[in-house]
Image (cartoon, rainbow, N blue to C red; front, side, top):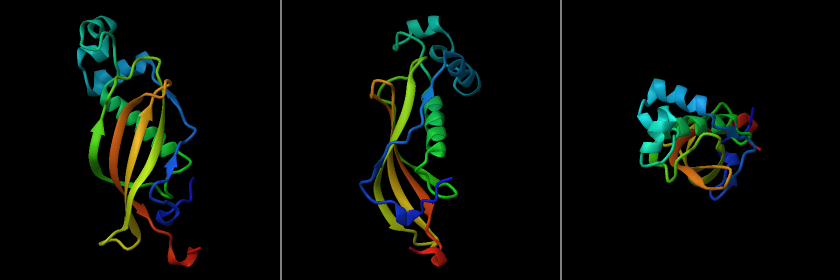
Length: 154
């Protein structure tokens, strides 16, 4: 587990974790059946007839895969972050079966929490990229991150 506290991050810092995830056709269908049962997520023929021209993953599936990459990252905050919402969530191009996704995260803003002195509030831009380095999702997220306990200040 990472031991990064609020004080260990810096505005402008960009991290590119090593993790990758391959998006399998069966997983696209299973996710869509349960959470987003639109035809172009469920079968090849419906995908071909859609504006996409082929089957695509749900944007919500992409978001869930992104979160799994964030949570597994070697750069995450100690004990995790508490999501406070998004300023933006964009899906500029679709995710297709067989795509391999990775993330990169940039720290945009930081400030100590006004109500929780043991936390800092941070704004991040997380881009999810495919194997061709094309952005398939971009999130601007706000989160609370634990501050370093007083006894362990460096």
